[in-house]
Image (cartoon, rainbow, N blue to C red; front, side):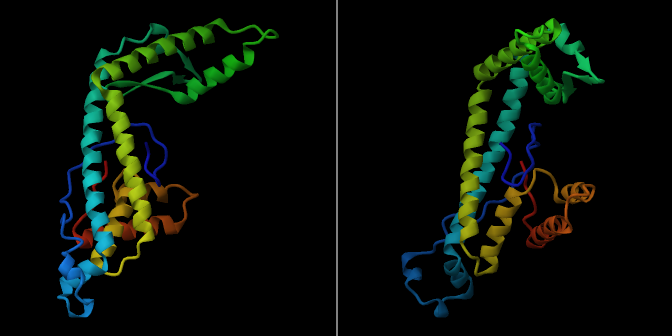
Length: 248
């Protein structure tokens, strides 16, 4: 499942190195400390109390993000295993093409369905499969072979646990998205709290390096300068804070 601000993309996602967790358990401080007026608390402790809710959510974000990266790596491993068990596609699927586009394309050692051509096949079949028009046998044959090949892949994914891992990955991503909504609603009052918000923004950012994303958006004439400026500011702020990006 793509993240909130990421474009829909079904390609496998790379698993980067882990980042250090935010300090766990110290965000809320002790009951006694919470009873002391902020004015007389030491500076660091006062900062923790001012942004206690954000710091707690920051710790939760780091935990969920780490779990997400673990699952991404596991999903990739199981997907590759399922691919080895998947039945070979019928020769017709490997040779079928239209306007120079093949129905099956190889990428990173795996075969992927060209969904643009797949959608055309389904639309063509739906249009011509009626009492008025004669159905094209080749289109029907290709769709039937594709259905069998995809069914074999789904059975292999269930067998090795890939389906369950994907579902757990989506569940964790959903939890992190909900957490980011709560972070949005909580105002930051200290640099520590602002750091949590930057980390949440980093999680929401498209799954690529900030430098690559800035260049990609610059190549798109429809993207406005503010989008690239936001990406640039996030990149620099994270670098200054020493936390960097850690995309799945």
